[in-house]
Length: 136
Length: 443
Image (cartoon, rainbow over the protein chains, first blue to last red):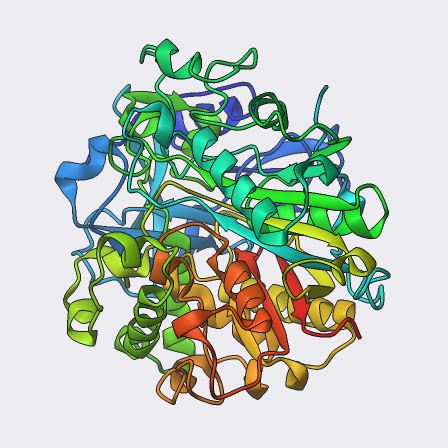
């Protein structure tokens, strides 16, 4: 299941550079301590734009919720339908969500609340992105 | 002439600000709709601009106001249903030049400006106030109401229009690209993981069902009721083009889009325009139609902490929005005769009405409520307009129906189980919408 290629931009380059090194990083506001994802130019809580840093995460998370996608608008994924599309929440902060196709998990057999760990998957142009596999 | 976006101060976004200062001083007195169609047919007569002119002229005629007395125009300039003009497609200059164009050749075809409308409606000789309420009709209504209330315009047209082009929903552009930007790839929108438009709502609905022990099949009575009401809405898409009652069996057999959201849980994108004429309560007394007073308005500007709102975030926000709606109008939930909250995905209507506390509902109650009499003949009508599910995606049927019910002009949809005196309509999203309270009386 190959995803569209990703071309990092100024905002997201550290996130994708880390992914290529198989590390998971998330933005952290040094002013108020908020972790945030997806990345943004400023802190969504305190508005600080000059105090954003990238912080390493453990790569452990829980499955918050999922759907089974039967009709995606993304052309490159259509031949793989139906597929799981889950939202995971990081163990460090359940307020931080990431999407996952849960590679290796049969369609519609998703253990909501179950533990997952990050893996890194190459997209169509070779850029790696975080994915998540069920553990335990 | 450049039309500004409405200032943030026009929207009532926080609790504790009291009754809307212009309560009962603004009234809807005219309604106009274009015919519906599934997509643009490529002719000048079927453009979003043409439909807009038609709807505006009907609203003016309906109100019985001479066009030269119209002094305000509020519209949503974004008209896409998810269909965007491909930059590689040639511009149909014969269509462009059929009208008086602006500098943007797609104006009136795949977008809309107040300037384009005024160039092509020469009878509007006295419009001094124009403003954009960007998002949907619910935005434009708030902006129009606020503008009349503040005395910026006395006779204000409010318009929402839609264009729909060839091709499947949201499948062109970035969806078809080989590579996308890093920000888009990890954003909350379509992303490289491929969520359809209904993905977020499907997630929230799944969590709702787990939390309260409900199931997707419990939506069937709501769906049947919505289509039934829609088929009684002669201005709507299904009534005009596909007068087919949706049965519970049809609904439950429909293919999934993002399970637990099926095909029918998504509204159908169409081309249509709708317009209203707002005026002062004083002026409304002398007009052709019975005035329907705006008692208040409220807006949600909630945002998710991360990619997609959780059920908790949704319920905190809809609860707050419900309180703001009631506070702005100076009413209680018991005063509401009927509701026309948003349904553009069927699976989030319950969030809106539970937050509002319609008929005493608490979180988790709505799907059980759908198993009772929710018809237009009953004591607790749910979405008598049929909403977007019942008549196609206009995002204004619920407003039109609220006005028509109170005016006594809802025809075959007329409520018989309740006296239509106070209604709430609006949307779209549970986190991010605008809501209006309509009343038969200004008090």
